[in-house]
Image (tube, rainbow, N blue to C red; front, side, top):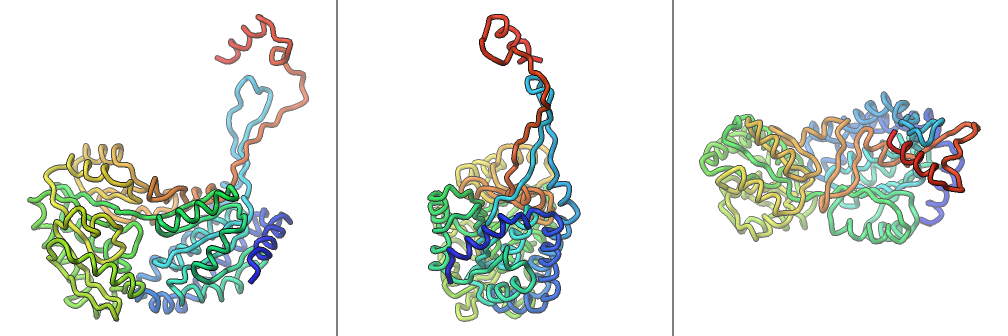
Length: 457
């Protein structure tokens, strides 16, 4: 396939101004919703084949998520796309100042394998809403879903504006040699550095949704039963393969016994005594990742789970207490079914533990202490924060989603996604009325004095 020609064709179509039309954008968005709804069973089957995803989990986190995203955008798109009036200072009067959103052009969306529908189509919704063309590169590590997207997208969307390219490192490397108007990548920091380096050659802006070790702190004032239920759900959904999953827990020593009992109870309630046979528990994406995660089990005290079946890509919901802080379990993003719990002595120690490490994509605090809430929100730098729950900020479309520092750059979801794929063009319009001579040369002491006076009005 001639990638260069493909990019040029999309750019030429963009220049026809078709994609700037709000009605065209809305039509494409409705087609994305139809795509996931009319092929729901096919997507569920593909996700189960790739990740062993349970049917309900696939519907909630992938199919329904995308459909809901489209509904949210359609209701608000006219307002987002309108010019945004801003005040005009006296030095520019008479005049009218406003911000005019305009599409960037042709964008590249590189999806991830852990949510291979959501993390392709949600960025596409944002790109379409802003009026862009797009080339979509699904993850080759989820081949069944990638193939389905490659088959369906051309059937539902404007082929002159959108196309899908399948493949691995070779195809992605080739794509990155071409001048896109924006690149969005979801994945890990190592690949993100390669993408940034390639984008820099064309001065292409990037949005990077990465990950990291998202921490949880549980205070003694928290309701431990509710905390354990929410924590277990967020950690072992998709077998732990979620970029905003709780990566490790910090808890005071006197709270640990109660927390362990509650977590073990929740694992049993959610997945039964044998999670391997549960219809509600998924699988690791491939044997390589399964072996990687299993290798983390050689440190710390395993108090729950620990069973591994590489051939089945299965790792049981596992809890490890106080692993070595220099072990891979505590220095690498786990992205799997192991939950380390670190015992500490105080809230201040928990804050210090987190701030000494890379800024995470998400952080979680469970407490009834309002002062702790305030301190956590103001002193812990992270991409996203959830208090007394995990992951659920992602269910609020008006909350921008994105990382900070090593956990990513740029944001999307709702209006933030529209703005991310738009250029917010500044416009000042003035009438043909005679200007005060004070702004023009020759400059005099009187003019200088008047300019200083005007400046402070």
